[in-house]
Image (spheres, one colour):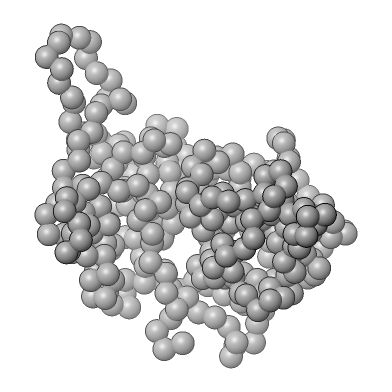
Length: 320
């Protein structure tokens, strides 16, 4: 499937937008603010049917060096895919922190309802392992050049354009030449203090509520949870400011046993995941299905979808 980038992608989206008419003469509307009217597709294939019909060529593996495994003292496990193409320095820090066993004694200490779960050493942890960059650059966006993008095809409230690149949901600006990961459910970002601090990667959070897209381009987004979200979401909410646990009220942080890379696990124990490729006809059909739900329940297909509601499929490698 041909990938659209830059001005071509922008024109493709604008072509799907229809100006609203009021019957009154007025100035010519700016293309940037053209009104858009959904065009539902009747009897689109259900997303589950599209997934069931995929072949191995429609999926890409998650490399072991890009898979972070967090083990909790209560038996929970959380698996996180890292995104070095979007935040290379922060991801390198996370790898070094994992290999340096820096999260020994760390906890989940913040659970804010409909927002985020945060973990780390909460200002502790001692000296950073060798190789960790203490003041990483602000990796809040990256150059658009070099990314193969499938435009979503629907307008967005937070970015000039949205779409997917190599399985990741992104926002991008064809005029400015920048792209960034979007804050969707299960996205993982780096906790930081006020600017110019950018965070080392020692304090991480995962989105557990409605997509906080206002955080896009303000925090380094380093990946997403691919399995284990219940181990984060099914937690007592913190009653302190911003959802921090208040131990004086009997709220106990959840102990983290260890965090390591799948690449550093014995081969027999190594988890293997696959992400649905976003540059295929199968994914195009999947997006159409997400935008036009039908079946016996839906009365009217929406004819549109938000980038965070596409939910790129991720699965365990068949046979594992």
